Length: 122
Image 1 (cartoon, rainbow, N blue to C red):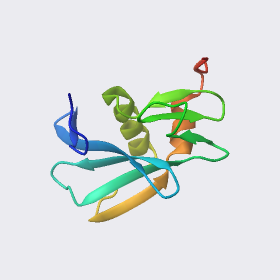
Image 2 (cartoon, helix red, strand yellow):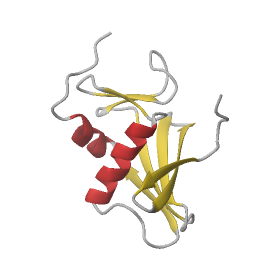
Image 3 (spheres, one colour):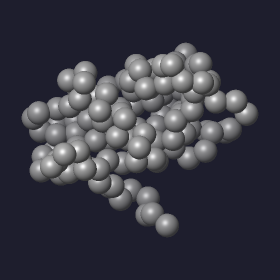
């Protein structure tokens, strides 16, 4: 079983990326953090707050799941999902190049990832 809070790795070409997911309060949000292993102080945080765009965390969702307004569900614990968000962030030029934390609303990226897919039904 994976320990909470431990960063995970993704290989993209020759580059090692570190990523992790956290549920944060007080405004109940899921956060996906991405950073290069060789530049750990330059971090991108994709933040998913519950609101008009979707829901993040809490019942009936499982740990790390986010659901968009259209009914699509993604699990931020899955490496493939983290990789898709990383690829979309690269495409949009969101990855920081200097030390510091860059926070971005993750819902626009979510919508790009799920466009053209069938919504989740329960």
